Image (cartoon, rainbow, N blue to C red):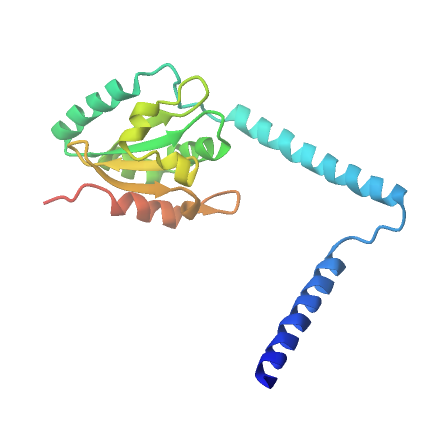
Length: 194
């Protein structure tokens, strides 16, 4: 009985300590005028972040084509991959997705990554947007965007067989992507040379 009481006291004490610690992190608001300034400051900061993201997005290339016939495009890539002995890297997402655009720009502007991709893969940007969700194509691969968000990568072998699904969050670092993690990902799923 004493053990249960001691455990209960420890849990209760820890909970109270955690709540007090959280309260101390909240800025002190003395009156409704201060509260209004705090809310206004948060709104202004959020608006500034949205504006910066919109400006960044506007400058980045838009590789996704909502009008493309994705299944036909992928079928052509499979035929080409068989001839060239390459795998197919599908980057699923859309022009609305800043992380999708950032990844594309990162690969295209980093010679080490671009060379690796060009040597080992046929690269395709599979569109997911209100204009074209490519539901049948995504269904073939288990709808990975529903599970992982965007971008998500679908790796096919030269015969069009899906060999890997890669969420992108594990490749991120700060406001961008990790060179080492992206390099490792591309190297891991490159076709095995005999």
